[in-house]
Length: 107
Image 1 (tube, rainbow, N blue to C red):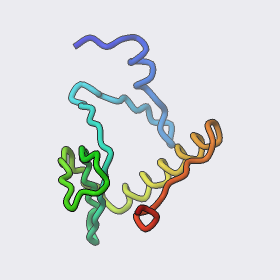
Image 2 (cartoon, rainbow, N blue to C red):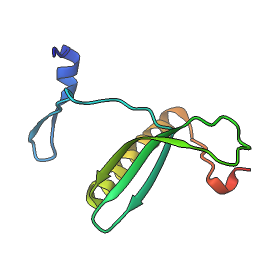
Image 3 (cartoon, rainbow, N blue to C red):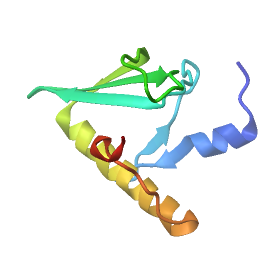
Image 4 (cartoon, one colour):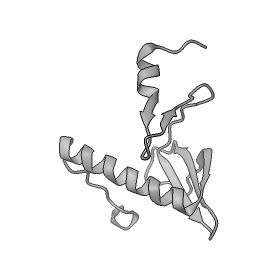
């Protein structure tokens, strides 16, 4: 499968110790999720991603179609949390604060 020049340039980066990292996206897939649930044990953090297709708020039961499960170590989860925190801070700096209401705020 041919890669574009832009993809090749973007796919190469230097690691923290000067090691060259090459990202192989040949087997990558893309998924959309508007729901995420996370559970953990001492050894792993499990993230379940899916899609909520219920459009009526007054429903008694909602079915979430789960599409992906990602399992990482607690160390990888902490690094992911730090990365996501940085991305959200950059987003808010550029585009304004995100107002996220928790489950207790919904009626």
